[in-house]
Length: 462
Image (cartoon, rainbow, N blue to C red; front, side):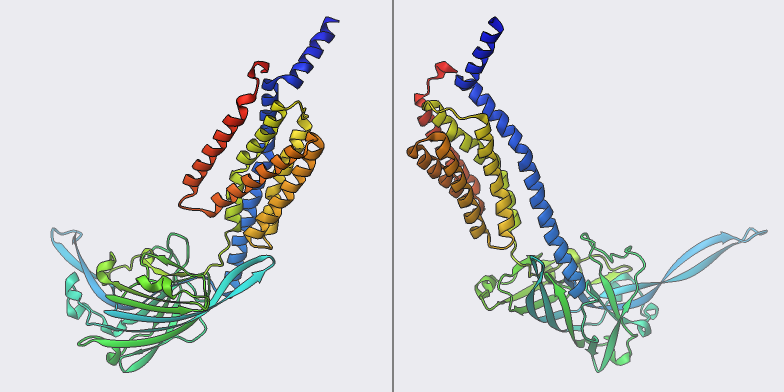
């Protein structure tokens, strides 16, 4: 009989004790962390699939464009001396051996005019951008200065000089590249690279392929005077187009029909670039001087990796639904905890009993919000997806609370609280610079409301 009384006493303590309710609610919140973790993983998986589609379309159409050149490439001889003892004698002989190295000279001025016609490509529910660009290059090479590296004029192999162009996207090139250099034309052909020891690859593993001209003749060599050049390239690419400013003065004029550009790289366009972005496209101008970058106009022996100094434009489709969904899921713990807190306060202040199972059902409804949000946002914009998902969850919980609380005023209070909470979370997600400030102020206000509402709780029943 005493055991039965103890069991009844323990059950009564579970039903009436404030401490027991708080422990129960805390346990349910911990249980709901498991599906929230899976939802976050689902969001990351869908975002990764989006990137896979972008890469797949890029492989078919043409990858991002990174361009470097034109560069004057001239071989020269270097000599090394070594001594050795003649076998059987005490005499020493000196041997002199020669080795061919290359010097790379950048143009004095380089003007680039790029017209970028971009379109959206769809693959299932995902979108990415591809473009076709016609680029015109004009500039000039001055007489190379080999004296700066102590190379004698007779050691320069002028007859084997070439022009070098490096690009990340050979497959996307749509025309035979020819350069008008001085008084004649020269064609470019790709060169095979066996390794990346000379900087063929940069940090993101984007391959830089080489196009090289045939040996230049006397009329196309800047041996005694400056030589002008012009060339044109039509290329298909995706997502991004960038240039390395190899000219002593490099200017780039870019126009496009893309209305959502993101100017990127080591140099930004002139100040009025943002003002020229309209619904019909954009127009931007860059001017980069040699003093603005950290490399010289000539290299001897090896051409280094200069992709870090590139600049240009990203033409990515503005897909931030997954990022916003992930940020929403980070507030999932807060939404569940505050919602449970509202029901706890109602249960504690009134005489209404809420079963742990009912708390669990409410928590699962709150978790379902995030699966609705990510699935709908893949077909609608984030605002519509958020509105639909939040309306569905708020409506479901409000109707469910009607059967629990048996009071219309409590149901309206639940409805108003959830509406305010989801609106608050949405505002924080949209903000960037002021997210922390607004979030802190909002949480402070919530804390003040909870402190005010909990004044009437009889903590002696804890």
